Image (cartoon, rainbow, N blue to C red; front, side, top):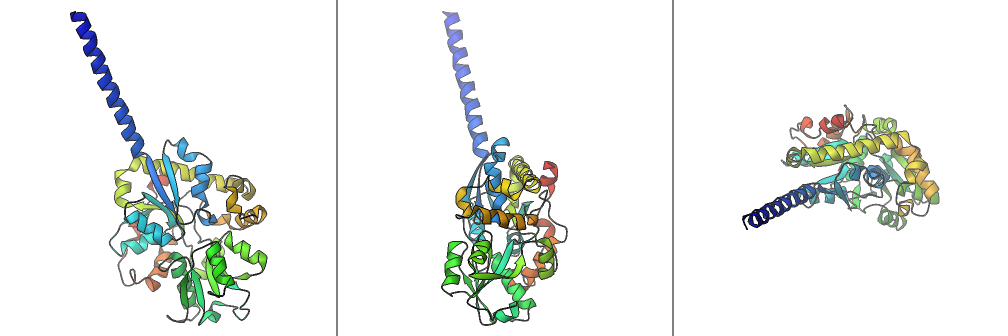
Length: 338
């Protein structure tokens, strides 16, 4: 009788222990579920996000990553601040802009050292041969207050144009950008691959200023311009260092893959609808632009200063504010990953 009671108690204790283990495992798994908003994941500038997923690097690190799509980076930023997502794949300049509002966001992995953007000009306006010729014109940007908006205004200013000389029109990217130019709602606009190649190939637009390479970016902006990145709230990073390290590991491996494989090999890993019916054009565009990506996720040394110079001139939030650039990015995780 006593023996039966002891067995029953042992089984009961085992059941409790098992339940505790399962509960701990579930909590651990929940902590490893990370949602990242991508500012248009079909854009080649944000290619590392989908590529890391396709290569299985998130799973290799034991993290469950969900990628959500959002056409404009400024909207993705709002989702992060609202706590709807834990990270954003978007332009680093949001980290600088938000510090001016008292919000601390940091680039954890720096994907690129050039914007990967181009100012396209409509073929309907052959009179536009330089940025100075854009006076009185409508310029397409992904969203008001977006990176494309600030960059466009900065280059207009460098060309001698004043505030109000150009009108920024939010047209998104991809199909909506193309439609806006076809309908002459915009006469020029800033966009990325594969939209650039699609419009140049059809003869509907030509390149006015190219920010797809480090050299052309230096010429246009005066320095490297760290753009695409994984950025997160500093408080979340500090509270979830193991998860952030796993993300950094996955993305550093992805950047290494980009650096050591051909554009065709990379394209083969991407969803077929990203080609928009022209895989050859997609590969050609990637071949020309993949030099924008960093090899290791480390922030280029002169980059933050260039970004601050652009934003100080055109972001009402940043103008005249003291910004601590060292708090807008961290290299701790990528260096550990290497």
